[in-house]
Length: 274
Image (cartoon, rainbow, N blue to C red):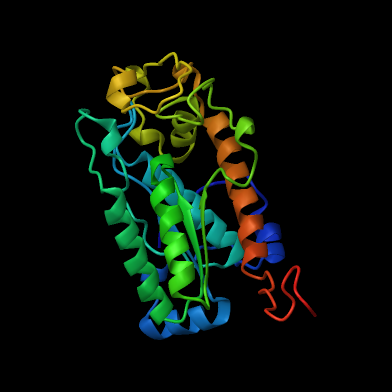
């Protein structure tokens, strides 16, 4: 059993409120019979989508997957919504010449997500939360959600980032520019210090003064170290714990409400006759 990360939240009270047990439900640990019953009972899954890509000289390649999976597990513990194994490769080729990155083409990620949801749909699941840990996956996940809503008319699909459920400007990443392009920065380093301090090499930390620009660039065009963000050496586990806890709480509240949201009544369409 994968341990649930520490959130600093009152897990028993929140789980009682939001429908969970306090422990995550891991899809891969269920038997096929249990998976069928789980799909019938709750009718929803969380699909973490991360990446394997460079994160500067001080963080591991798995940052986006590790943080996203940790949020997903904690949300599952609070809500009871099962988590499938994370998709660990994403749309990462824009990191350019930095070593280590394993990238999918956007159309490949779209196809992988389609196959995963088609399989889960065949098991009886009808609600799918694509929880994203890497901003450049956004386009592919939005396309996947649109295609799957059309293909499976009895299903609901939503792609969202693990920080989506609270306002972006509230994310304390010490990034002034870049349209939320925070990479190996103060925010991610702090969260990793909270979740996996053994994987953070603070003695190798560098920062990068982000600049304003209209265009999006490959990372190797704008940063010599693969870092985008200021004051990375000031990152702390305490700040990471606070940011992580807020991501979990806001996402869990949203997911708990979403899986119980009434379906539209086709006989009462906005603007139509009743």
